[in-house]
Length: 289
Image (cartoon, rainbow, N blue to C red; front, top):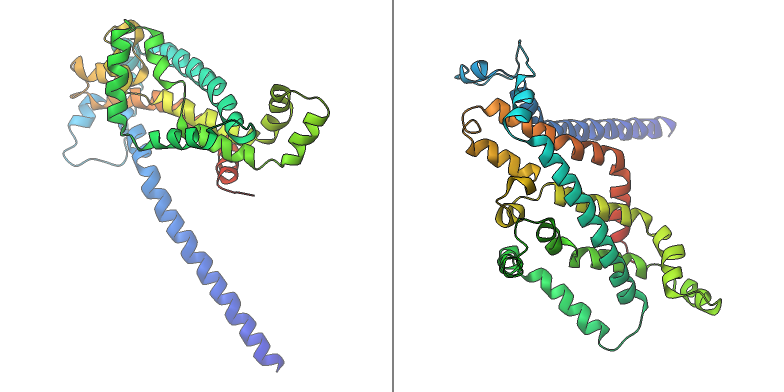
């Protein structure tokens, strides 16, 4: 009997080891597939122009790395100014959006007013509208208001998000009603309850929304390209296109890849710092009750 139990235990341990090995192999293969484009981007950015163009068959390494491409990325176009423009656009847009969506989510989750469910349903229906139609409408509106080539024109269409309101509303609704009723009995105002109770409890989701909005603003391309043709308001995404249009973007691929690396680094660092908060916020937003 003991021999049979030992045999079964050894068989279970063997199956567990095989399962782990297969899992780790699959994860390793997937990691290589996901990370290879980043490796290729960095590798290309440190290859010289002549070395890159002499490779009839692309090589997975280089014996003579150079930083010349990074120097060209900043000297050929005003990439540093585009960085400052993007930073201003990102910070202001994200801050204004939080000012808009937090009270909206609080109103839909805690306050009672006539037509609340109908209004929220109409809000959600806006998510069904293709972005192309929204961009056209925003472009006509901003142009008619004379806000082209201005920070207001860049920022205004991005200061709200139905999806983020919905995500935050779902989180607010997970907070027990007893806390809200107790706060009202103590004479706490709705605004104070929101600031002192709800926001601290939902901090992971708040951080997640902020980070996602920062990434969205940093990667914004279509709207800035449509609404600005003045270099003073160009963002980093426009800088890449400007490199291409200036003549060396299509030919000097290493220099263009160097600019892409520089633009990508802040977002990668941001994700590495806050990835646990992002996962916690997303998992909390997907849990009800």
